[in-house]
Image (cartoon, rainbow, N blue to C red; front, side):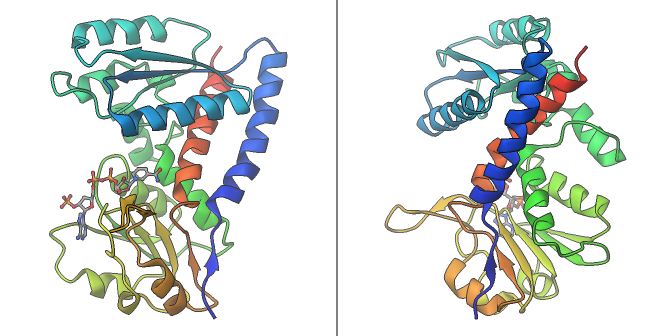
Length: 285
Ligand code: NAP
């Protein structure tokens, strides 16, 4: 029997229904939550991400503003726009879609966003809050993964979690969130010797390498929870994750859990962005 599916789409719908209710309550109190999304340049993938975020806001009672700029926009002009949005009381979250063009320093851009409006959770302050276990805005993707793991009902305390990837936006915050939930965490990366040995000893695997077939059936043991963050394309151009889904699902057996791509982490990422915007709006006075 194959592993059970962690349905990111269904879980996202459930959380989004709560978002709509909370957004409605804020709007009724005259504090409709607002998100500003800034897109610089014409990267087609970024344009799709931004469109999906704006649509999700509209669908769940969050006011959104989309600001699109030519790739030639200067860094100073972008920082000026961010300063204006920082001061705008109708905007509770600000998101600059990454990557920005090369002549713009992404760190300077992220740090220019008011920490209370940093709904991506990428700023040094937000990272520090997560690291220190303080309340704050958590990066949407790893936070969504945590919700997916929690949805299995399997307690994390004392379990061994293996995170594949150490980026600032996914791997590292993921490891910190798992640590906070009392898991014992191993972080693997491209220089890890013998990835298979680590994955084989895991109760939970979060794959965020951005490389197809990073996790194959021979690497997992029955009963493991596998969350696939990767977004790649197969030979036919079809979207796929980092995990060899069908074979790994079989190898995990009925006590295991696995998230698909598409329909797994993707819908949860946007959902947690909505939750962050709501949280920022609720905290604003
Ligand atoms: P990233 O910045 O490229 O980081 C990838 C990480 O994986 C790096 O730490 C890298 O190690 C590690 N890695 C690469 N190849 C590996 C291998 N063979 N074995 C072990 N580790 C390996 O990517 P990211 O931004 O974290 O994103 C990771 C993936 O998740 C991408 O496919 C991205 O598209 C996807 N993603 C999806 C969502 C979503 O909403 N669905 C959101 C965010 C990201 P080094 O540090 O040594 O280079």
